[in-house]
Image 1: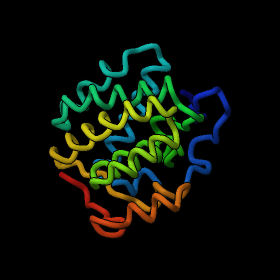
Image 2: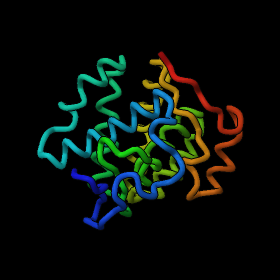
Image 3: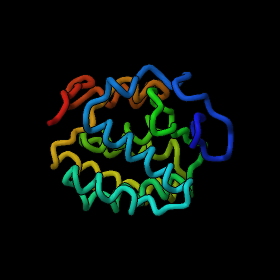
Image 4: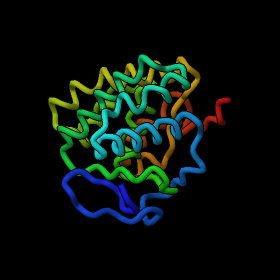
Length: 184
């Protein structure tokens, strides 16, 4: 993957650490950090000609969510094949969050928060319509498995900088952008 971020469509992205929003990886909780590393690992494996699910099997087992891997893999495969726009996924060591990573994390956070309508709207913002419809049950399953394993993905305001309408809807329910401590 090099020092540049990967994007669908071959468009150059900012170098690692440049731009990418206000959220630093070091400030993320365990659940969103796990999911971020899985996203980056999936893209890295796919670009390297390896089977992403095989590469990620052990981390999902260690997180006690092996069944969630199939749902995550299907979501990422849909993103790779049916993205409506380029999704920025940064290299494994980048200290900042990429726009595509933020889109995926926010979709899972919304599903965990019991907001499937907003999760579907978020998916529709980065996947073609048919792929977005097919991906929603995968996102909801991934979200349920992660939450059951004690991996709540927080609704962070930084995840919704690009869509104030979703940010307003996301703030209702489990509190206005609750943050979760590290799960140990």
